[in-house]
Figure 1 (tube, one colour):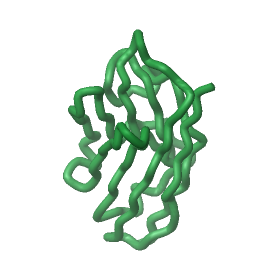
Figure 2 (cartoon, helix red, strand yellow):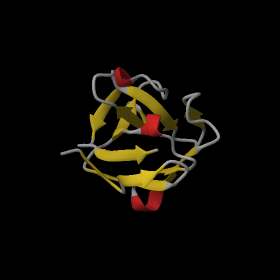
Figure 3 (cartoon, one colour):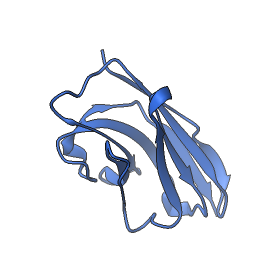
Length: 124
């Protein structure tokens, strides 16, 4: 059974940093790419893609987070990371980890497995 467990969320002041982690287990991806991504959803807004990393390590970022967030993975530990710096109040949202997609991008409907989310709150 696929399981993605996020951690590392919390409250921080604007300009601060946080590092999110996502431990993945229980799934295979023989016929799809082992793409993993981070998404976020603020109250009253649609879920949006933040960053994605493909099997070969190539990355994609949303324009709003480029140069502030860094996605990475430790394949040996089956763990995905999101280093967030220079945080802004508009980054406040629940952040979700997702895995296995036929196309490694920022469209949430491409992903098969999802974590339960972790709250990130940035105060001004």
